[in-house]
Amino acid sequence: MTSSPTPAHQARLRPSRALRGLVEFFRLEAAAGITLIVAAVLALIAANSPFAGLYSAFQDMPVQIRIGALDLAKPALLWINDGLMAIFFLLVALEIKREALTGQLAGREQLVMPLVCAAAGVAVPALLFIALNHDDGAAMRGWAVPTATDIAFALGVLALLGSRVPVGMKLLLSTIAVVDDLIAIVIIALFYSHGMSLVALGLAAVALAAMWVLNRLHVTRLAPYLLLGVVLWVCVLKSGVHATLAGVATGLMIPHVDRRNAVPDEIEHSPLEYLEHALHPWVAYAILPLFAFANAGLALGGIDAGAMLSALPMGIVLGLVIGKPVGIVAAAVAMRALGWAKFPAGMDLRAMLGLGVLCGIGFTMSLFIASLAYHQPAQYDGAVLGILGASLLAAVIGFAWLRAVLPARAAGTD
Image (cartoon, rainbow, N blue to C red; front, side):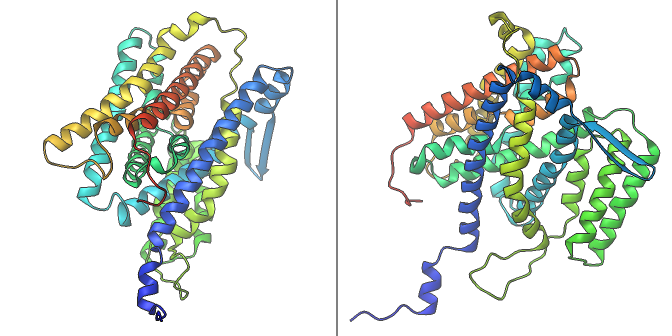
């Protein structure tokens, strides 16, 4: 006769809250990647169909918000890129802060490999783009376009490989993408701001200081931070600094404290984790697909075959498809050779190469940087052509390579 398991034994059998949260994160990101693909395909169909006029009218539709002397009037495309994407960057900042305090970026051992790989994965693509476009000053504004990685898209491709993918590979990919996003935020702040208003920046500093004071007073209610975040967004929008950086600043000011729930099986949430958990589905299934639909609609009718071979799109393609894996794999091999870091469990050099190729899926962040860099339609269309082509190539090559080199395994072996 078998005895009933003790509470302690049941606790050991139950997956940890961290593991359950990790599984939920990967499922959500993978599904979000598939949703992004669908949105981009729909945009291409809309832009190359009898509905092209409606698609352009949607992008240019005027939207105005007026409260007293405050008047914000922008076309729908800019509301999506400046407004809704600020929420995306808020979520990115929340993830970065959580990872830095209690996650994969909290310790040196976990941080060395993704930090160095991400830095190399930004530098090499940028250098390749510059090598091809250094004679064209206008094209050079987009040097940062091929430096980004779209974590949702990349994890969506990994999801198609099922149980072949070791958890260590998913963790490394997601951590590289988080560091990559942090670098992209710095790049946007330094290189894609213009015509700054000192008055608006001063008001933004006051709002940011108020959030810092709330932190020092140990205020954990989200409402004051979010209200100040809206004020900060308006001030940053009017300052000349790109408005999405207000989302970053707000996210970094949300407190992350260890508040344990009374019910053991519920996820433990600090205010930061609560907001991150609440925003994630909205960003994954609404904001990012809407962004992709609004920005990926490239009219292919006027593009000849030679357009893809021009310096601007080729710089993006080479940067993402060649530069990303070369930078990431070279950095990872150097880290291992120096004894500073090891490959994750279940990964060899061939698997690392496949991961590097998948990091060449730039998509969301690349499209976003392109929208900041290029204001001439011809240049922007060339950038979109390069981004879509590179992301498709990276996804197909990465999937095929990893399917060939990763051994089939029974589900749950990790």
